[in-house]
Length: 431
Ligand SMILES: [Ca+2]
Ligand SMILES: [Ca+2]
View (cartoon, rainbow, N blue to C red):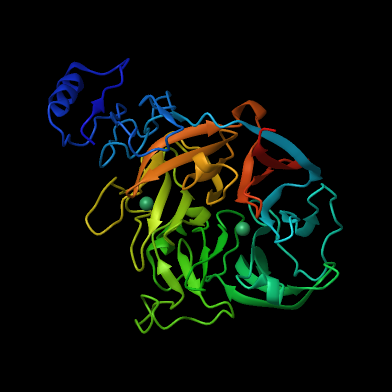
């Protein structure tokens, strides 16, 4: 924590240079200046096989050019290289905009395709016919068949959960359904929608979503705020599920210890509020929930989720509107609102995430892997004491939009790419 290395700056003003020089004089430097993001050495906290340069990987100008992070290292942390030798094999091709991959216990993989199909791809790469029994999806825009998750007791109950944009009277909305996979794995039975995001809205953007089960046996779901200016306010409203993380029992009922149970005009499923469009959710080795959301232009965020807290959108945010204007009324920090643990400016357009816990890659244990669509790579974050201390970019040479990343029972990583002819990849130690 006490070894601070300054990164050479190309365009800093004399005033900023003086401010940085002053900050460098003490061990508890203040917030770094605009775009300069000095970095704290993370050599002691990353794995022994990593090397740390403390030069950020991002070199472009930030979009929020007059903004500064709330603390050092909150953006543009040290670039790192893990020196792990791995092979990438293409397990399957011809998947139409796959949105999620979920490894099954025996080595096969469930894959959702955005237009509304759920398939099993065998470990050897055989792409199965679509599984029957799913309700229709509204696949316009960003909608469709989205995430899929296995019941924590899947081996016994063969139950799976999925999220999708559901056609409804007056528009559509994200919903969660569950069903039981038939013994021959060709169809889902006992299909039931267990949760519907409210309100319904007639749009095609920011549905979210990811599903993840916690150690508490509860199902956590993440949802967007539907994007349009008139809808943003709902992220702050407790009478709406838009822009929220929710927590329900596997049957869809509400646990009594949710934070807003019993509060007037509050929906009891809500766990946290103030999110824009969460596309990733991953539990870590201690059972903490991390989510990653698409922010405005220059404000994609990694957040550590804590019961009942407010994560700011659209009142508190980094970045600017995609139109190029400032976000009306927004500030980057405010008392009572959670700061992101980390943010990207410019954005990476994050997708799925996986906290790596396997044995195939010991150097990666505890790392958070995040897919990037717009930057077409796999991002690895090293997290130490609740802070991101290193960032590595992998697979950039393949130039594909990474839509989801999951760890298989073999400890290998499985990814799907967001293309019309999408692919399923396996990352395994080099043979
Ligand atoms: Ca999933
Ligand atoms: Ca936020």
